[in-house]
Image 1 (cartoon, rainbow, N blue to C red):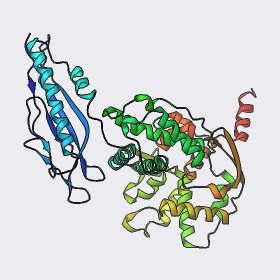
Image 2: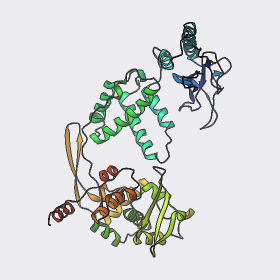
Image 3: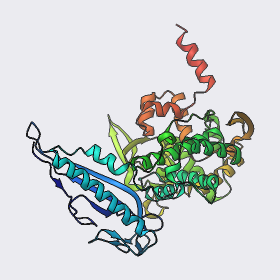
Length: 447
């Protein structure tokens, strides 16, 4: 049998070694430390069909090497790392790192020599287990790993998700205190303890608890991929009984009341137009902020002319086109020559808009009382609030969805207009009023 000779990948922040190479990842954490990686590439042989096969292992060692912070986004990789010798230097803990490097090289060299002497092919999965099992335990805490994950989280259009993860990490810090456990010690009991803390100490309702636990387990799955978890039990599904979420929206008569309302200030006048535009189009607030004149197009079909918005959705990065009703066109024309940078609408920040919206709708007498129910552990709590107190900018999108269905729009058309990839997303988004449901039921069986 032809021997499988080891092949080392091209140089990248490290150098070639006979039994693999160590190198530093290019992405530093909050403190400017760079992950120490091990890589081995098996050149492979031609299989029975004559095809060339090659496998590669890239393994995070659990160690991080200090780098020199040059700017906020740039770190000098070689400050405490000798590229030629592939050794750590100049910081506390360097000896532990070098001991680990020597151990791994000894293990790999012994394994490859054994395969060579017995004329056996290299089993990459076997080699992976060899360098993973009993490797030097990572000294990284659960909090540190979560903070570094948050720093690297740069998905386009996911700023709100990043803020939610940041909130979860803050709650996690409150749970663990000044002595956070190491990642290797995190297990199912730890996650259950976090749930108890969120419920009893933070007084989070079950919906919030479920979201935070889901975010934590998302991060732990990444740690598991890197071989940093001592137990996979932390990834097991833990059911949190979730209370139903009340969908807040404006009824048709409330939309008309807002249309007729004359705000006393310019800021509330602008906010009214922005919110109503959302009710007419169903756009997310992040897209209301980004649309400009280049997105506003005129189309003609069967002799009919109409206007559309054509743009890339910020959250999903997908192209989106939606026809504009006359009321939405009127709002655009109102601000056409008044906006900087050719923006279509005078959209304030989300937080300011939510505050202004409550003031606006209180003045417009949108004050229907709504009973809100939330579950805290096994306890169910109910509170009654005025509608204007709980309205948010996102309520415009809910309003569009629900009124569209009530006015006869087909669900699959609504799905496309909202930019959802699945119809189930759309149906989770809406609430059919009892009056409409009863009318449709009677209509269906009136034959």
